[in-house]
Image 1: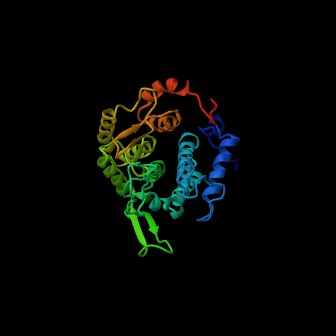
Image 2: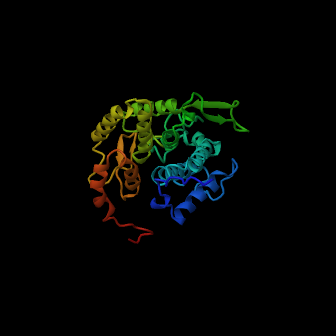
Image 3: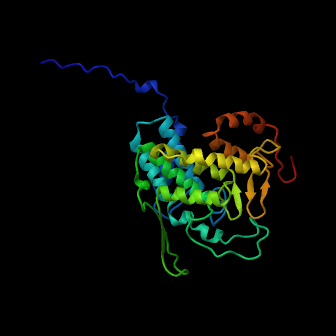
Length: 309
């Protein structure tokens, strides 16, 4: 009995661009880092031992998650078996106490971020409830991106995002802070409102433009998933708040670095670093502005190192 020939496959995999060796290598590296046992952070060391600077675990994990999302959506959308577990593992690492415990000390405040301060605040461990958008904003985008890419409501379920605080030698016993995507977003919106919609503080007293872009992207995802209207309501208030502070684009063509809450003072940028970071993500909602500004922002800035330009 003769065999029946299979119809030709309408899709030719070779006609689609594949990952380069370097791109695949980055993803392999992400897998290696995310697969480490909890408490192991090999090849993820940072300049500051208390996770205070720009290479802290939270930024590394979030940036890896965004790269994973872009790779999956734009390059290999059918390959869920690789990307979903990797994204899930990065979120798991983001919830480890090693990543967010810095906030207890940071919440004390200090003169470096608030020159008027003469005493420290009473600290708190919950990394979500107030300020700290430099963590909560990234976490919201990570779990919202996970839901959007994989149509998975794991982190939308009540009590699905848990922070366990139980230091060995101080405190009055273990504490547990429980959230989900909706309550995490609600906490951020409450802080936005408290600051007159200029944004949520990262460190105490400092609202950075760049750090407030991530949660707004996440809110847009959640609007789409749940047919809500958060971002169309929030954005005009955010834009008006910055207009009242002199505008988002300053006289030097750059975005402000930050706004000091207590002093009601805008810190202007002296180089394009923060602006470039903010623009990369603000482009998702205001591409026309970002593309118009890019030629002016990308050229004409000199760097001075050790007194030499």
